[in-house]
Length: 431
Image (cartoon, rainbow, N blue to C red; front, top):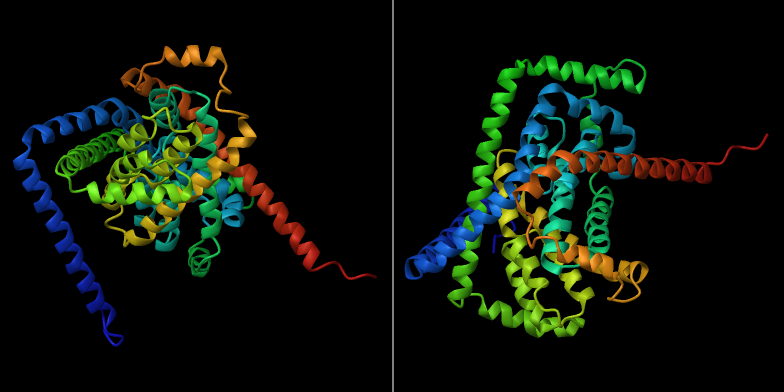
């Protein structure tokens, strides 16, 4: 325990030392397990490589490249100026945050963290705003949610609407709730605003032109650097996926996680959930794909409970995604503990929203028609490379536009509510 009179620097150094000891001890433990069970480590690593190549690479790489190009050409600044009137009353964030929210929802983790780190490096958002943006945009992409989880693991397309609604509306509600925190950022951002020409569209084009001039890289150099940095990031993401896949398999086979699974199995009946779902929570704590696969594995468990667990796993995102976000945000002064707390709250909120939405969307677990079941039975169990690339080229731009339209609509509602409240609180004086 740190004494009350201890300096913040000393407390921070003690925390860093404790973190280093914990991480070092975990690394030694996993390394020892790998030496003792090399076959399991190899098989788990190969499964991690397959997930990275077949699902993550086609889903993330185009967006990594696209985000670099959009930043270089000033498109992010253009969209930020247009979305600014809608983002501030809704989330108390600058307009560039609206583009990050749209890209994060469409492309999935960790693209939101990548864009946020770049904007923090350019001093377009503060640390508090960046932390709230990352917490809100660390979400699954719709292609993985629908293709891999709903169709591949659950085998039911009917689970997609409720799972998507709970996952994304939970993130939006979390972002709206976080706006009521500290208000220091509004002063910092307003102090950095530059004089803009009248008219929102004219101001947006002016902001894009200034950003392009400040960047100054020719198209060939910009494209080359975007490809290089994106490939480097994909290698980091792949390495983390392989590491956590192997680590989880080794810890399970070594019996290290058995007490945690038994504890979860004893606690889940208190909340009306099957103890057999403890494996899904345990796997989902480390890796999203394995957690969702375990959640959908037992058809004897009610479908609504399995979907609720999948919503928690998707929203928590697993330590593998946490490590990816931490690596991308490492040079920005970003803090992990608030992020982990928000991920956990998002998971709980998504679970509750599944139970809230389920009676509204379905009147029974057999709500899927025979046509839907016949169609889903013909779909492959996993989202392979052709599915991922086709989605990146065709569907994701459409989803990006829909996400931006959703932000504009929600922001317009917030503006209307604010205006109505101001009129109600301060009515016009009577003549």
